[in-house]
Image (cartoon, rainbow, N blue to C red):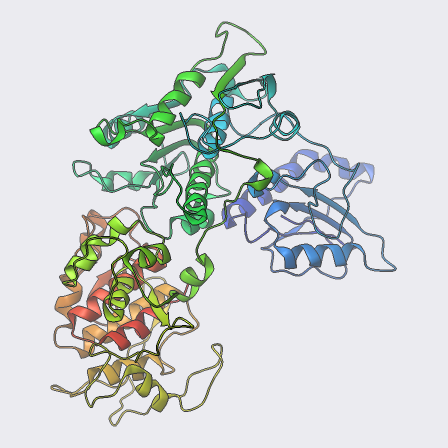
Length: 635
């Protein structure tokens, strides 16, 4: 949040990275309560100017002369430059205060680290060593799992003694620099009530057990955050979780989902089901695999740190989690150590302790790399990845941020079998696999490879044209992504009013209806995607509904393909809102144009893309148009 003010009124901003809309509302509520409590001081000549609360948009009012920045660690390079230039503007007298958590960045480089590039905060900082957000067991659990402190072997990220004391707030009882040496950390904190309780971190063997414990406490959405990183339990009804805040992070986009929907939130109870894919990697045959592991571990840390009282893990009892080195075993060891304070009978200064040993593979915290190894913004916003020939199973999996084993079903479903992850994958098969994962694959030639013809039989449309050739006819000259695409005029057009959905947002209905037996449905779809009726600059959900409406209206099998779509236990499409709501948590069902079909819309953008690609495939559209439609759904 940013708090600039001028002679008229202060304005309170919020960083778009680390603060949600509801947090702004909370801040405004606290401000109003403050005014109510101290309004009597107005008679003493003290006046209060109410701030204006709004999201950070990368700019600062030139009249602003006092600026308070919270979550300053989330400012990108451009934002930091804007703040530095604002403060250093010649001829002005301005004041800046920031609050940041450098652990969020995990790039600690000493006490004089550049908190904002271009500004020097040396000897002007105050560090808070007490944790007011989480009980010590929750705090220790998040850090321990992120840095692999409780693992038996493999890489661990271990801060030096100064960092542990000054940056993380521990008291260091033992600190060894040699392999196998023991490190003992202690902490006392009377400022959080959770530090007077035992078993604030615990496990459940199944989702049903965890839910039964919470259901008896009459907890609501604001009380419980439930995050699922693994496959659904077959015997558990996930619709029960409608009463809580529930996020399905079992997706290649989980890193972005956690950053977007989980980070910055706070809940008294957090339930973590499963573990992020990749967090259990221990043997690294490449830097990419190690970075993938640290990325997954950071996801786990961010979810743990949302907990303000009780942190629960759903730990299966099956044989797959019994082997040494699994994250589940780390969780068990962590809970063993932090379930009780060293002296449960102590009235004040209850001390907590945790111990772990160094391994032969150590990483310094200032070298800790947590950034996603893939082009996350590109995949999320544009739905594209780019790979170089030759395409192997391993390369394809790495581009999709998945383990090769996760692609087996898709590859076999396309009649492609392979023996090793180094087997070559045909271009068309690779592109189909990517569509099933909700993104579009662009393949480029290796600098030393022989040029390969890009089109395949799957690309060819009626008349022998490729999708690229049709695009050339529809768009004869280069245009920017932000401009309106030229529209190919269909031979028969009729104006049809837009349909209003339950939220009051217009869902366009295509004007040109494909005649029965039309020879070129692919061209009709491409024409619609480039027409002004396609909601190119609206939300991804509107683009999703518009494509589905087109398919349902103008393809003979369109309605059946939509209504027969199945994936897991959810109901994605139905002819009534009630049917969707019976089988989905927080479905936000919306109508698909005038078709009489309703769609569940609370899936992430990547899932929407993959659903559209499957429905278009069911309707018989070619690979090229399906890729264009998938890529048209933009976050």
